[in-house]
Figure (cartoon, one colour):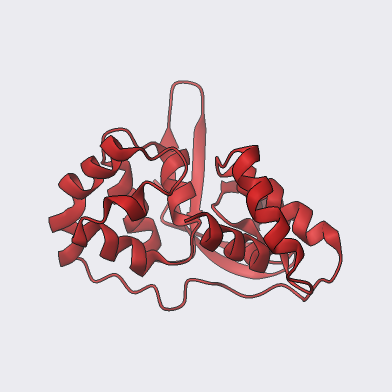
Length: 197
């Protein structure tokens, strides 16, 4: 129903942003909301998913990212939450290459993706993704101001949990992230995802 929303970010939370468009605030679930800053004007491509108990808007920075989300949803065993957790990792080109190459070990590092689901991803998407012109060069988004206090790290760890990573996995990367001072929440999330995948 919706293709994109263009407006101002008014709320940032670990699982979503609120984008105000013509006086209406839309709650948009995203893999890494901290790519943005409050007050930033953005255009988000959205996918509306209707379930029995909820109607949810999922947001993406580019059409290619949205298309990849749609492709992942077509795989048996992958729902919107799992697809979003997979896309939270900024290395989408690596994801596409792993699927095309049939790299099961890479795919099973994502939360909620076991060997069977990873094999299904390769089976269902291998031929489709190799034909699509994905361009993920500018997927990182605008960096937030540099923050040198722990709230940025706390927000990042909360966001990793929101993406489906367990406390044990988050604790593992927390020590490594604490040794990286002066990072933004978005930087911490990106660094954490690289350590987890």
